[in-house]
Image (cartoon, rainbow, N blue to C red):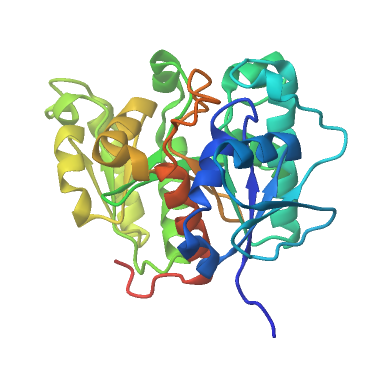
Length: 336
C-alpha cells in the first residue's frame, strides 16, 4: 500500500541548543504522524541522549538514505558523514556546532530541491556559532538563497501564529542599516513574495496590508515623508496590477486589525516580531518565502542557556511541524 504522507526533513539546528530536545518533545504528538513522515538530520548521539533522559521508550534508527517509516516511537535519523558533535558541547558556542547546523540545513534544502523530501521544518540555529565557523550567512533565508543560488534580497521571512502572518521586508540588520536598505524595489519584492506564497497555499486572492514606517504612518508628512514619497505610490501601482494590498497603515493600528488580512507586511525586524511573539510566541513559526520549496523553522532561538535542562517548551516546534506538513499535504481551499 502506497504511503502518501509527505516526508518532512527535520534538521536539528544547533545541536548544542534546545533544537534536539524540542524536536523530540514535539514528536510525542501523534497527530504529526498522521500528516507526515518525519526524517531527522543530525547527530545520533545527541538525539539518543535526549531520548534516554526524557525516558521515552523509542528506538533511534540510523538511515543511510532518504527514508522515513513514519512510525511514532521510532526516530529515523540521517547523520551527515564527516560532521562530528560531542554531547559535552551542549550549551556552548562552538565553531563545530555552527558547521554542523549549517550542514544539516544545507542537506535538507538540497533534498527538498531535488524532490527527495517534500518539506523542511528546522530547529533553531545559533548566530554566534555560525559566525565562529565562518559561515557566510546568519539566518535561514540567507542559507536558502545561498544553497538555491538565489539573490538574498529575493528571499523573505514570514512569521505565522494562530492570530496573524507577518512578512519581514528587512530582517537581521541594525535599524539604521534597515532604513538605508528600505526602498520601493525591496518592498515590492516582499509584497509579491507574500502574494505568491499565499496563492500557493490556496488564498485567492490574498489580502495584504503594509505597515507604515513612521509613527501614525507619517501623519500626512508631519512625522516622516516615506509613506507619501514612495510607499503609498508603490501600493497604488500594485493595486493597479491586480494585487489586493492596502496601506500604508499605522503599525499600532494595523496589527490590531490583523484578522482582516491574510498577511501583513512589516518593514523592519521588531515591527514584525513583537506582535507575533506577544500574541502567540509558543505557537509561532517562521517560513522562508520567495523560494520554490516549503521551509520553516521555529519562532525562537537556540537558547543555549536552557539547553540540556529539559525545560524547553516544544510548542513552537510542534506548531511548525504541523503547519509544514499541512501546507504540503492539505492546502486551504477557501483562502481564509
